Image (tube, rainbow, N blue to C red; front, side):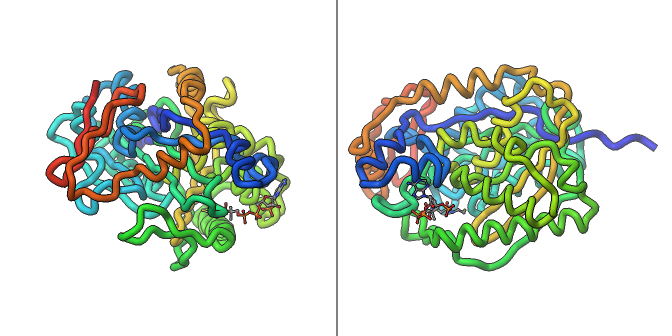
Length: 387
Ligand code: COA
């Protein structure tokens, strides 16, 4: 009998908005102790997209280095996960498909379930590659977290994208079975069709997250998953990094296993600076863990994905020997350092400027440094360019 191929994440890259707001400035402007944001929420900065940036441009920016490294051969599926959809019908992935020059023989679809969509895409991709190991699936998770100005959720905004290539014999992470899943109908966070900012019941969302975590964990164990003591590092979804700390403590309490904070802290390095990136957030955390140590081969990483509404999934990945081949840490640190610092007034102006009305044509100048730009609206449709 043939041994089944190892399937998992072959490559991964991060992108974010080109501007950054220091949360100490937001704290001062809103009369809050900066320590509330730094320690209480575990956040230092938040990325803010420029006027010519959105989920499509960030998603394309994340995927471009992966295609540079591996080409497009074998990619017959592009799964675009987002809860910041730019159209009610057309998948955002179709715009990125063109911008990236992917071949026409490619299925493209958008997936939505709050912050969980990227994990749904990963599980589907594994299914596709299991069926035909010659195929590779490109996943793009891209989101802009937007809440109302002067609300409790305002400091937990952010913007980012992660692209991943799922393939047989992967360089980064094998994703073995089993996986633990959990769903319950809860109104903790949602975005009605007539609103471009999310509605959130913050405290309820924290409780729902923790219930989803223990529920998914119990299912993972019931399906034959390993004990918490056998997991070397954890990535929990990070709407703000302190939430991951709460989840980590909850797992220790729930399992009775002592879990040092050192097994989750490396996962917060980039999210502290990017802010919430919804579907991308868990995979930004994974990027941070993989970048944190040059000796992770064979380590087992636990990943908890949460999407309000609410769905949770817990699974693990085992680090492969080729995981340090591409210089991801240097690239990610450089793109975070290259963001333009903006004032609270400039951030609020950008927050207000997001185009809501498509009935009038709009031209947007390519003002951001990246290669991909939202160029405006004509004929009620969004337009994009690549430099
Ligand atoms: N120094 C240090 N910590 C401080 C502080 C200070 N000066 N002031 C407050 N804090 C701590 C609080 O004690 C609290 O810690 P705790 O969680 O351990 O109790 C934390 O900072 C947050 O303060 P709190 O008053 O509870 O925050 P809030 O009412 O302003 O709202 C959220 C916090 C997360 C509910 C809000 O930002 C939100 O709704 N965010 C979006 C929803 C979200 O991300 N949900 C997560 C699941 S998806």
